[in-house]
Image (cartoon, rainbow, N blue to C red; front, side):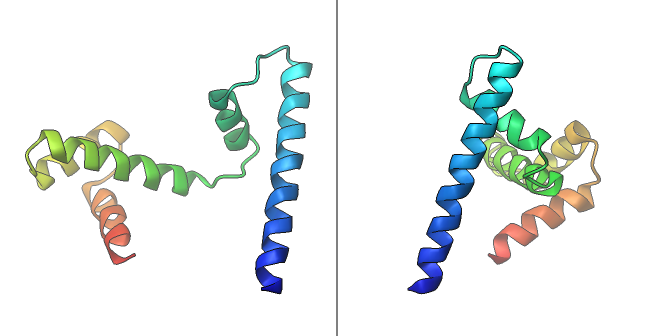
Length: 101
């Protein structure tokens, strides 16, 4: 239970500090704070690794397209590889790593 409490405290502090930093950034640059701006800010601060963004996007796009493509996985992988300028092997690796979890 002590571990969970420490984790919760760290998460709470992280959220507070991130929000304060984002608000300061918006005020400094006269930007309206919104969720898209916050996501961009988090990415710009390198708090999310580019590989996580890539994985998330590929998985979401694959799932969305597979529904529309009637389960044509190979065609969907090829289309995503072309769209994101990645190899088909990279797309397949992302998909396989997700299935293992």
